[in-house]
Length: 155
Image (cartoon, rainbow, N blue to C red; front, side):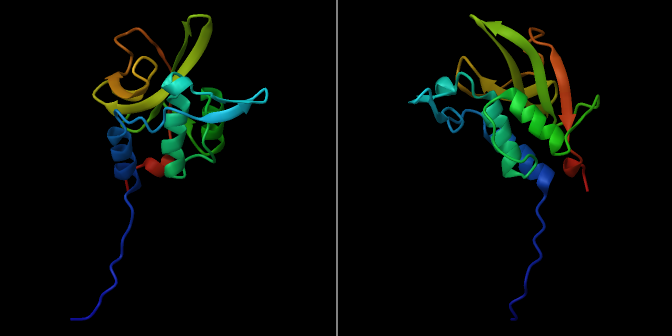
């Protein structure tokens, strides 16, 4: 029997969606260390501020943005530069940006992935890990923007 080379073609969208779904509960995106004013610190506060890091890591794995970010603003800017466009057609794999909310003395925007059936996966600041939840957090948070990348279109 001859050794025959197999032609393997990655299925980007399905692989991307599975990585998002498999990320639920992982502590992988919880910490990122930087030197701030000469002192090392975890700028994600042990998962409290990990939403942009989580989303940008997944997007970077699939070469859908240029680099990993720790802020929603940085992630959104890179997405726009990398071909992500606003859409009204919400579908699995879209990146969702929610309105800014005040938490204590700080106000934060939030970012995550739409997984279908009015559900999303994003980092929970309470649990400090990615979790699945209502795409509107039970009508407690308004979706501000929805983004889609043409590389994720079905072949």
